[in-house]
Length: 349
Image (cartoon, rainbow, N blue to C red; front, side, top):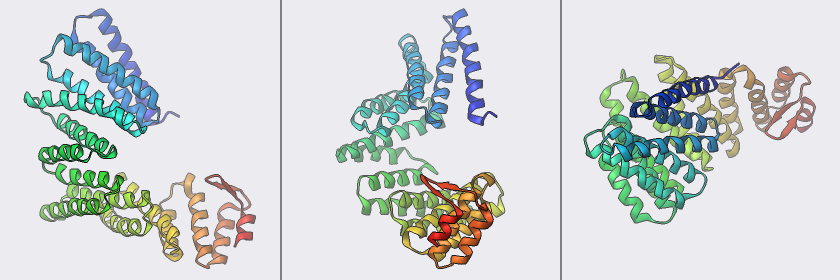
């Protein structure tokens, strides 16, 4: 059965086939060429999400090539500059994420230059402004990682000036992430605090019925907790993910939906793993209880084994062994690269 992404890929390829035929038949119509570039751009995003980075790069490069030719013939059309800017941004991000930080700078420079052309001419759209903001913050991160703090700070100054409404808290949070990654922990904590304070204030002013503001606040807290988890700070991760789960559970109960439920599940999951690292095995068991309650069937056996492990570490030996025996009978399961069986867990217990 095709996944949603597989189906999207098929549909994009069909669209590209039609659009390319139109370009062949009407080579002097810029709109048809731009539509090919747009579809290549969309394809690049999809391929990147699927982890096919080289294929994504080729798609972005094809889109960039078409938009660059369109600009050469029609330099005053904003959307062609928008296409060049966006593709330069995506190619820069690919390089940065591959560790080629210095190489990414020229791509971010080009992204800023072309997107500024659009905004300076009054052609702003929400997506253009968002991509320009991301171009500045991405270039700032590259500067920070290269030890060019003054250049990074200059880009952040522009990013803060550009940010409006809900973007302001997002920008401060992204600033905190960048500071955190380059070892400026104290400054990053201040940025995180400010972002969360702004989200809390907005949610408070909007009132409890404002779903969007409640969600943005919960997401900010969740992302902060995940930042601590991913940087091996389990105590802070457990603290912030616990807060996130409380907020997300309230949102889920009031406005049922897959997005909140998904975050609640993973919040409990990473809380459990954080408690495990901290040696707080009873707390880990409680968190695993929540994971097991929400677990999809294909992942359920792994959740049972992980809870059983925490139970064993908490001294609940008979419960741990019974859980594994009941869940798997004598079937072997795998966690990471380590094979486990009921007999091995019995011996370990």
